[in-house]
Amino acid sequence: MKEFAIIKTGGKQYLVEEGTVVKIESLKGDLKIGDKVSFDEVLLSDNGKDATTVGAPFIKGAKVEATVQKIARAKKVTVIKYKAKSNYFKKRGHRQPFMEVKITKLA
Image (tube, rainbow, N blue to C red; front, side):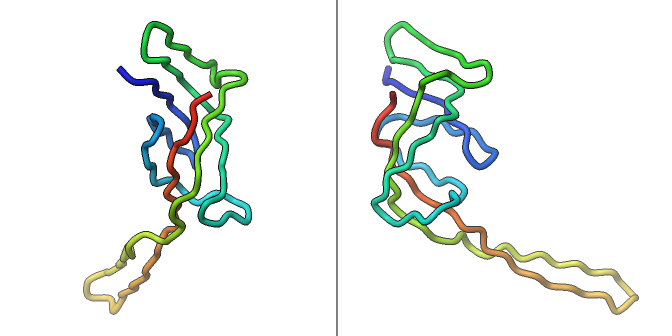
């Protein structure tokens, strides 16, 4: 079994291993493709052999490092509000920004 960790970012939790590519919510800051990102909110860590560390709520000193591979926006989500027989129709669209990061190191 491989070494893995569970991190929290953007209000969501992700199970990550070294080399995996994860699609996450966009992070604040002036980030470009190729920049290094560090995640400090590690909830669980497993070394792949015998030790599993569970945080309460986070593991102190644990870090997951990654590099930004892609910055884009997701496909459009269409929201339609409609009420019959009252001439009410609203159509709105939204594209959520996201980042793809490749996990480089679990520490």
